[in-house]
Image 1 (tube, rainbow, N blue to C red):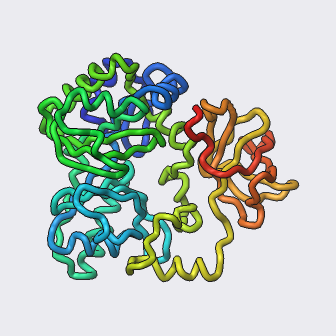
Image 2: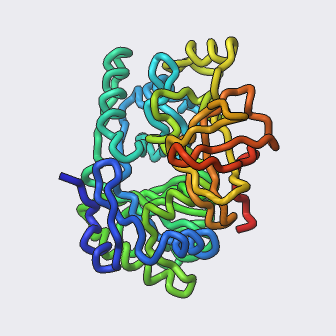
Image 3: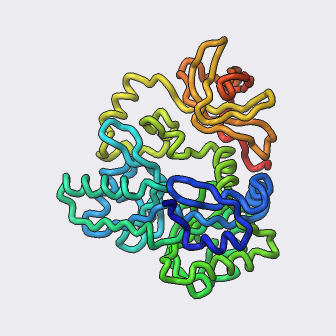
Length: 365
């Protein structure tokens, strides 16, 4: 049986069309994916992303656990700040990508949908292996997460709190109150726009807060936004989707995430990554913009002169560019920016595409 957000009845009231995603029944769209996409790019949108996980790590060795379990040295991240990182297996492949927030003496980890139990089990295994004094609590089923995203997101949230929202730098976080509801706010998101995420214990009136944010955003053109636009927004910015970009076991080097690796500390998977750096890799994530009509999809082959050189990990229509775009793992010798390749759509029609630098869309949309 599919899990549901604590706001499911409200989404139905708001006219949501639902979809299954990672074991959850969640809104796909309310008006249309295109309309909601542009609402976030140009105004402000409100997402319910309560399908994402919530893991709280406390104890005197909490920092050590995060540092050995991720590619970030957590001792560098002070209270009131957070970090995007990845959790690796010993072979250097990604278990999950995540954001952790340092609040007081605790760390709040946000795994991807359907990955909370896997990540919790892994962290407990590592804690036992290193005899760390920590508590690891999976609170995913008792937390809601809202994402307020878009150029007007700060102004909307400021209307319902005395907290100075503008003080938060990227990945900054704090405990605060919105319209009487206690939240953790972080300047994070999955759209590439100015945005914030709120984590709320569901013992509070999360439905009332969702309505309040919509009411506060009326003058700014706010709309509820579904997972369809969330996917097209992240794809335009070349953000990874765990179930796609890490499918089959990918390392952060292959996934173009080397920039988040802090090499100056020990972490699980480091030896494997150092070996990859020395020996090289066969494939790397590559960015393809279609120059012919057609929509690439996950699993489509990528060819050069009739020879398969890779596969699409994520693909779709870019509303801002009005053309097909894709991320694909391509053999490293075929990744020259400006070169053209062909994406084999559904195993039949070939779509010509150009290799480009990320992101597909900057601030011009």
